[in-house]
Length: 194
Image (cartoon, rainbow, N blue to C red; front, side, top):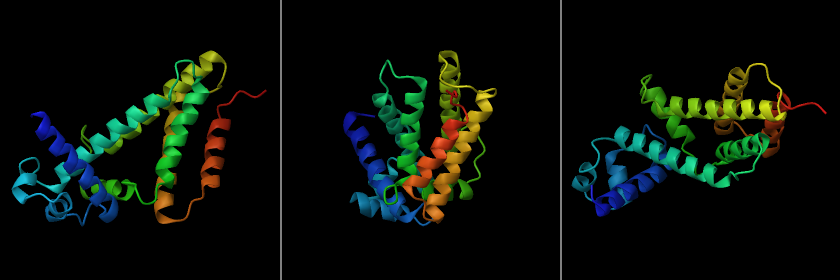
């Protein structure tokens, strides 16, 4: 694909993301995306055959952008605890993002497409998040910042808590203070007592 073609595809994905944020996944049609992008049907079908293909690419783009954003915030001399806090703050922003979040669309997509394959982006994001946390816990243990007998289990538990908060924020009112309290509790489970 040439650069003009790549720019067009990126435009489609960024515009489609807005459509998925506002409508969820289930009700979005190719016509919705054509209208939002102000392109012809043929122009869209040149790149994508259906909304599921578009949505998967939107998720991949979102994951790349999130990774790049997190990497920018890490300084070379940051401690494991500081990096974990940056990760938690990014999760908190996702949880509190009412109007700009893909969370509902993501869950709709995976409820509708029981995708247990290696291509399951939601599963990959969970596993990558858990792996990052596990590695940070292990580094923190080596540095004397954390105490934890089972870093892998603790990391998964933290990710389950984050996913639960994301769902709760979509279905009920979750305050920033409640999220802060939950994150402080998660950190207290591994913090070295002074």
